[in-house]
Image (cartoon, rainbow, N blue to C red; front, side):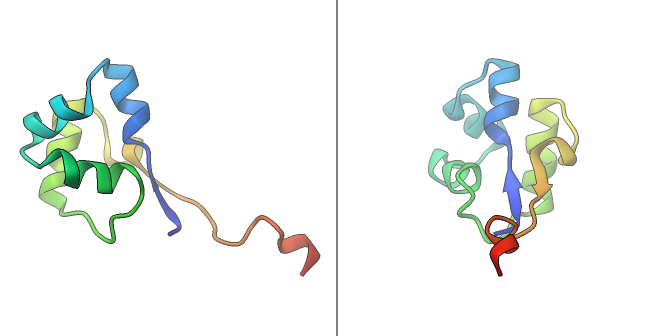
Length: 76
């Protein structure tokens, strides 16, 4: 997936656990783990807004685009 999620970075900066973030955002730790590990296919804007509110950040601090297939493209 070309969209990477950097929740770990913000958690470390805020010295917050995954469990605490999940509780404060109002989602299950399992759903937060799916998002955090890049396995989510979508994220609701309400969830993204809650994450930003709790982590005191912007959506761009949590999400970034990565080009697919960049590695190894030279040999093609």
